[in-house]
Length: 305
Image (tube, rainbow, N blue to C red):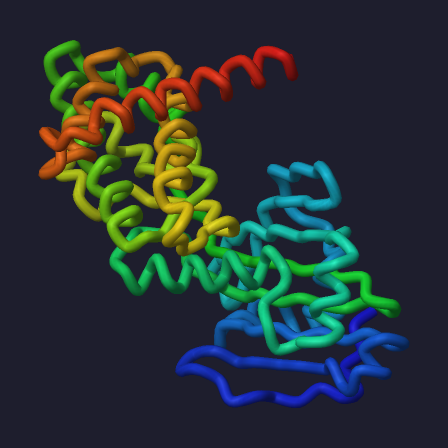
């Protein structure tokens, strides 16, 4: 249970409520404590005291559990209006994160709060991302750290590794080619914009891009319609930026092995992504590095299978 006896409301940004029950170092060590933030309308859906049991609350469906973390869909209703969210919970985090949180509790040591900051940053930069509803981290006695992140569901949307094959079935060949061309251009624009800020996603797989299900039936104007998820590893790098860039691009290349994506689409992405540096001398070397890294991802995946 989360100890709320010493809860205090901290100054919040507009539309947000911040809470903390961390106390002194000795209290954090022996009794634990939590800090979290919530959107102003969230308690109306989740109920008063929702934070006390968020780590054990039964979710509605689409539940996945692995390696000490779980995700699932949670549908709530208030006054006839349904709010559907996804809850990501980290039940067991490394001991060193707990130790750092004990000493510097105002820093974001958990993946949930780090992703919350990443989503807020991405939204401020103009990227289409899920909206954060609540996020927090808590110390159990003796430095055991847990965290949670709650975001709005991307209702009526599909990840690209599912959407592209569906569009191939629904559209005629000529229209599907134009459909892919615009989509590839938008993904390249987003990736180039992220890397241009020296920021790197570190989970840049095709399944982390979402589009509206309705867009698999027509030819939309893609700019601003492609949503991006899973920002918990987002980081800014200077000295290792070339390596991070190669890794991001290799992840995207590796994950592009889906029905409907061909060599011409990958070349089109490369041309759009490199513009206006496509003719610079380092481009062939960058391409060689990306292909090599993607091949290593494939070999590793085959071994796991």
